[in-house]
Image (tube, rainbow, N blue to C red; front, side, top):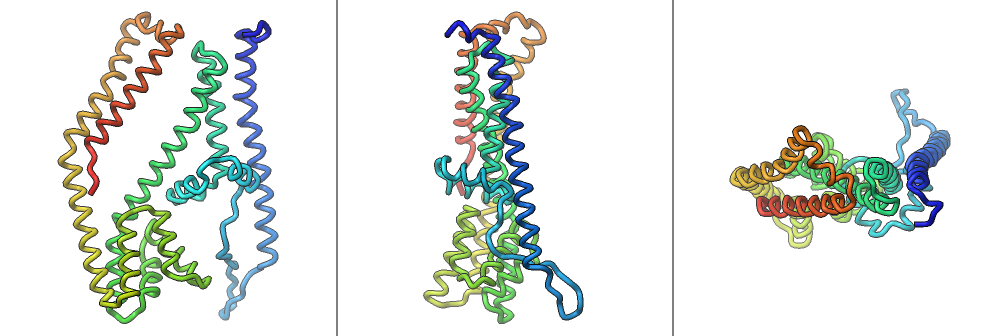
Length: 331
């Protein structure tokens, strides 16, 4: 290392980057946000308000694409980020209005904070702290987005058979499938109702029902919804009693849900074993820190101990991942 890059200088650089980067990104995002608000106000001035026959005024709604609060950052992120379409699909799966630019801001801010924390709390150098901070800044948002998406899909699948039942009753009363989907979207809560209302909005713009359903299937990424779309597509091509087909599909989906619950109950012992084995190292480290803190001091003060910490943490996480996969079954 050059002479002018002593420990104090490196720590000052890390501190400056860690403190300055989040503030700069926040200022950039706030600027984009206020510009977006001005843009929306101008659109409202252009569209105005619609006066109904009864004399009340309702705001005009646009069914065009949603405008992001950070358009500039979105353009930069879409240009440089790899696999932008897959990332956009993961963000849409959560049900929240999270743009690619906002996700990139969160990654950069978290990476800066993690780099600063690692540089201050460990004797690692600038490059090692930057690598660890970048890993944490990328991994944690990816994990959180995946969790939010999976949670929303689970809620969707829990309510989807009831949505199919509403469609079946509407079909048996003589309504077409498009009206049945509209009625189900108005009756059901989120997330099924919200997705079906998006399909309704697309149909009002003149798009075909099948293309809208396939877009929803891509966003939801669940086999149960793809079964529904395939059933509608096949019925449109071959004909047949669609109400009976959808009723059978609802029974199949409920059977899959019951089977999944039984498998989860049967695998509860394996999951409990995974939790116990995963918690034991953390418990032992906590007890050693309380009883003999000098015993663990080389693991955080010596570079060799820190390297062993990362190796052990990697092996620990890999073991938990393997045990979790062994205790999970696809239905």
